Length: 307
Image (cartoon, rainbow, N blue to C red):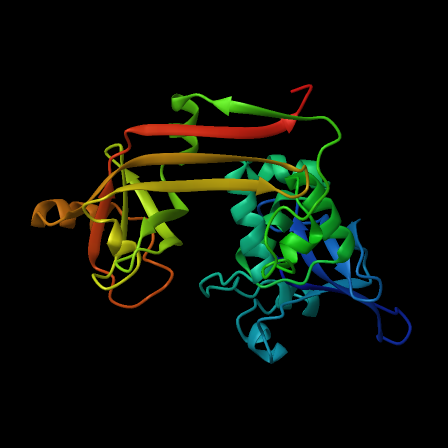
């Protein structure tokens, strides 16, 4: 008996041949697909470790017509084995929203799949399946994952997407400490979303979010000539990034101050475009690169007093 992630394990009655129980295989313990399997049962939504008996067989969910599997099987194979011998799915993985959020949070904390799975008390194969394909994990699974990642079930489900961060309770004994310039550079480094503070042409202050990169010790972002962020060109501006951990009521912020200028040299523009991790989320024609060379880097972090 061999299976792939996403296959169905079906247990039939020896007397009638009717399905007594079925579930989705969400974890493999051997690379060749042989038992045992982690199975999420359709009747209870629970995941258990299963060693299939003689009354069990594998059903490939990718095959709408069982005869397709029989045609490609060897003549001496039984029905259950013929179905399980079908080729594994070849389509490009298309993760669901929950899987994407799990993967992003895991990478943000620099956790391997194996370590995350161990903390969440699940197989690494099931975690890979969850991150790479649309899935509907049970509430118990989400609770374990949220606990392993130091976040909440609501956050993994995207339920707080329209709420500002920081609505949780403050720490009982918080500690607010200044960050060194080295720590600030580490937190600011690579790329993400930050906020730039500028004075608009009509003299009003404005703070707007932008997708930014850090390249050659410069903060760079793309915008359009008629946008609010473009008002930064030729001015000294403030640029801020932060992160709030709702589950632990901790967080940090970094503020960079320095002159902003537009990048016009063709080779420099080409290099920035090649090294950019993402395109601006706001979309549209945003091909004007603006760079900020920080002359000041300051930051603060909130942690428990005993850390």
